Amino acid sequence: MATNAIHLGIDSSASLHQNPPQRDTLALVMATILCIDDHPQALAVRKDLLETKAYAVITAADGPSGLALVRQHTIDVVVLDYKMPGMDGGQVAELLRREHSHISIVLLTGVAWEVPETLLRMVDAYVRKGEGAEVLLSAIAQLLSRRERKPSSGTGSSTERGQHTG
Image (cartoon, rainbow, N blue to C red; front, side, top):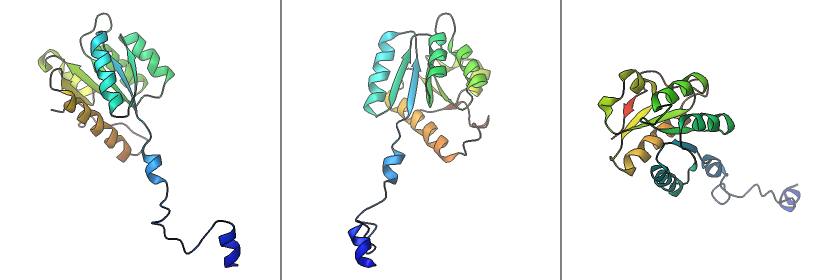
């Protein structure tokens, strides 16, 4: 019997350390980040930064385009500029929460005091522009790790939302 197992390529004496399970490969599923900002240069910089960290990045130049992309793609995190003409970041965040509550939102703002408190409670994190790339990357990583630890049935509680990272 043992010769048949070896002949079939199954060696019961082989150590798991020699042939480790492929669990790590499954854990490296790439997260998809949607960046919404009306400044093309800011979008390009964020896209390049996030792609260097192995994220799949989709960009939108305004709120309506971003919401359309959310409906077309599986998005893990939205990095959302607050001040945009037409539909601002607050309006986009409100629609995202209503229609896609499972998606994490990082709000980018020039100054936190200009953002309504209700909006800060609605988003998962906010980052002040100019705080540096590491602050944004850290916020995204924290949100993604929080999602991986949670059961898939719910979203963050209101006490988890609106965390400033930085």
